[in-house]
Image (cartoon, rainbow, N blue to C red; front, side, top):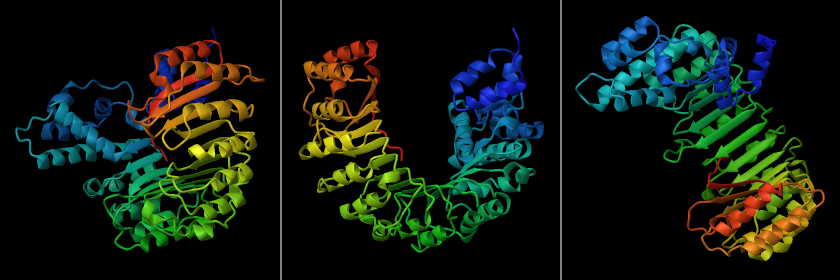
Length: 485
């Protein structure tokens, strides 16, 4: 049998780089496959015992002296220099994983269990591991450094090789309270960052602003306001926003105490906008945002708090036609049907929609299904004050277009009207008779066992199993509530 060339294997494993299970299997095929695939599998640290074994001898001697003697003496010589393969580095994760080695495996030989001593030992160990990465990892792509207390004791930017290791960094996850020295060094070294994720604490330094200013390739910015700390000066965040390049493609704002959103209007190349702000923010500044035009915008998600309905409707009038995905938060009490009708009127190119319809809004739900002829997936708030499972499924079966293939029933309330087995089977028969038949993926999401969704009944599960076998249902999943915005 002809052997695949290294170039071919590289292309294959590049395609599989996010499939760790398959990559791990590839390592076991033969020596050549192992040598090529291990570089993709170890793009992130897979085992902290193994990475410790990669340390140079002088670092191992240091660790032996501070309490890692048993660990160091039992480590096997690694087959590869795994540290040289790593492109993703989380200083915080290394710090806590080293702590697990100390506490759970009891490799520490010191008699004292003082937390202060433990922290000191962890810091020394992380210093040596960080030094190794700066020296051996040819080019990091992603760096996470969130804990400012760790930054002050692990000055990894000063280690030999740091400049070469960090110069091609493309993703940075950090904390605004990190040291000025940290941000200053990165602003001089890292000019290729495309994704920046910042947790805003009490302070925003001028060095952080400068770091953002020099990132001409920045296209994804995620800003999260810390729940426990407020900015000392609320003018700092608007100042930071002025430094952001206008060519930004993705902008996520979470829990921010930045109340004015008018600065967003300058990002006319936005493809994705996520606003997950607190109720007290009232989304001030949407008055200006409602008139902005974003011709590249494909994804809009607004959670936690919505702007005034008239402002959101105007925004959709201007931008809804560009959208492929729309997420409207579940807190829609007091809103009338005009928002739903605006979705039906202005967002006719949607592929994915998430929102809720109260019991009085069944007709507007049907109108949306009829109008959005490209719609493939609908996640809908269900039960309680919203439409029940039967009403939702009946409308989907009768009024969705042929592209529709996924229904996600998101249950928020324990109050629930049961979908009977005969009703479920009748709905699935109707779906089976659709021409052309597009198998349906059905997902149930709940937050506790008290919610009596359709999956809780044995008869319903048996019916679903039969229709999976018949090819009418493509997939059936039950999941816990999980918000990822």
